Image 1 (tube, rainbow, N blue to C red):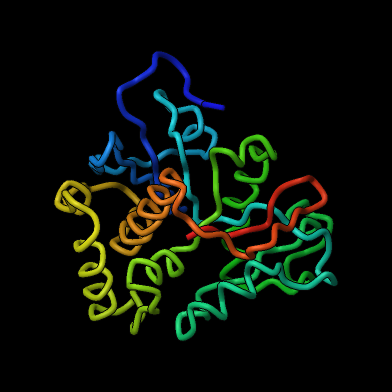
Image 2: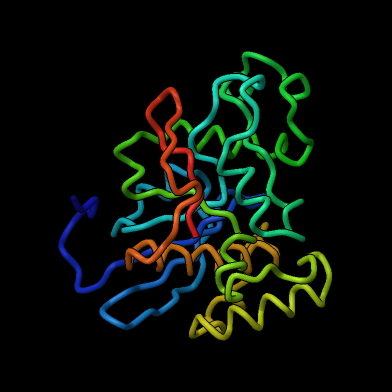
Amino acid sequence: MSLHRGPTLPYSVVAGVTPCSSGWLAQGAKIHGATFAPEPPRVYETFLDLLSEHPAYEIVVVNAAIGYLDTPEMGPRTCDKEVRALVGRRGSTVHNAPSRAVLDNLIDWSDGGLDAVTATMLPHLREVAKEMSPFRQRLVYEGHPELSFFQLNQDTSMKRSKKIEAGRDERLDVLESHIPGMDVVLGAELDGVTEKHRFDALALLWTARRVYGRAAKRIPTEPEWDSEGLRMEIVY
């Protein structure tokens, strides 16, 4: 079932999305047959603004958790554990999603076994959680940049951190070998957007293309749902 709003277009638009200090960086691309044409990146103030875009994105792969276990005592989600193991040396970048108790402010994040990095993401995670429903998971999928880079790099983890120049060069090489028109993306200047954000959004865009083409894989392979009926999975 299509979630397009407005007139039917001769192309579809997919996007890789990642949080940034000014909101949400969306790296979109038009798809028409074999044509895959990235557009200039955009920043949306809220996640709802992104979902309300006209024409609507056909597929969104976002760097934010979707689906939560109810309490910290239930442990980490299966998808977090399996992705962390799969990406190997880059596994430290795959953080456990908070429990719904933390997300709903029923307990403090420090009492919920949450690390400081994920704690800073809570406002963004709450935005996504507010808008999600089982039906909307036909449009919005959870991704992780390092998992996307793993797939882009022939199922091999990146060797270096993107915090250093060698790691950024490594990722740029992989992206340029798969995504055309990179100058359109990297040349855009946007408030609150770093090179790291751009690389993450581009990697997630590639995964969005794979979801659109029904080529993406899901982790875990056996579906798991949370108490609100949301699938707890990460695609790549």
